[in-house]
Length: 80
Image (cartoon, rainbow, N blue to C red; front, side, top):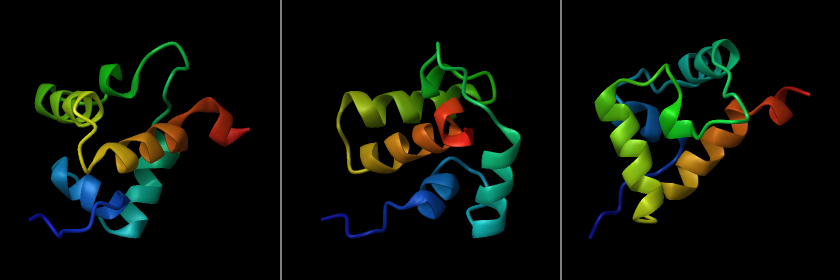
């Protein structure tokens, strides 16, 4: 049974990115998600990252909630 945390910090680490709060905040501040594309289709992901995000949502995995939260953070509405 997987008992690891599936928060934003852990998601960033899973994606191979720095997961500390300052790094997550910097990423969110410097990346925008166009409202016409899905998170996994954003140009700032590499192929493996995009695949992980896509599969997390398609399979409704333990990561799906964190992935949805990230999409919300990067959406234009979050910056309004």
